[in-house]
Amino acid sequence: MDEARFSLRIHPIIMDKMKYIAKNNGRSLNKEIEQILKWVVDDYERKCGRIDVTKDPYK
Image 1 (spheres, rainbow, N blue to C red):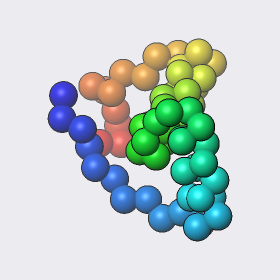
Image 2 (image 1 turned 45 degrees about the horizontal axis):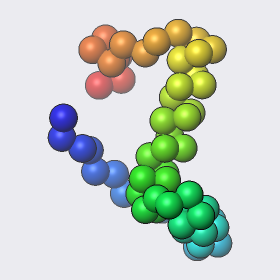
Image 3 (image 1 turned 30 degrees about the horizontal axis):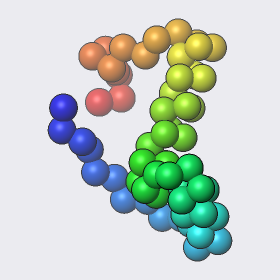
Image 4 (image 1 turned 135 degrees about the vertical axis):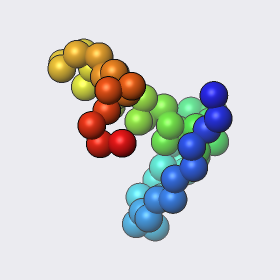
């Protein structure tokens, strides 16, 4: 699967802290953000059920 690109505007202090966390976890900043987003999706799906993106009304 091709990876989607997405621009993100973020406060510089948050960016610096995310870089620190990513380095501590042995990940690139991009992979750290991707992992956090995965945790959010997993948590949502545990609470609300699996998201079927083939039936996404927002596309």
